[in-house]
Length: 117
Image (cartoon, rainbow, N blue to C red; front, side):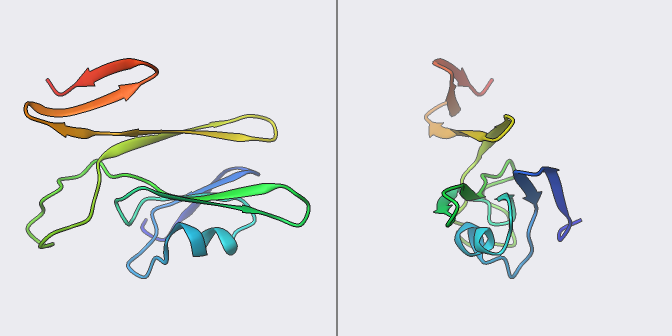
């Protein structure tokens, strides 16, 4: 569901978002956890430090969909994946953008190069 939020831990909420999504910066201000948003199809990250010195992160994640759909003229989208590892009191994020090359797409993750087959 587009507007459903999934609280994966007391530290992190994941949501698709919706058409009126205001992005990572504003969304993270209205949540009591860090948040990952998928709807906007491009990477953006913002961090806020709360008065108690804890930090929350708002992230717009990449997409895995077609970058030239018929229903959008020139979308500002990027393909890739975002991994989140949840520790007891901390969330570690790994962003893995897919970069275009002459032969397709390429990604680097943990010092290994992956290319489109």
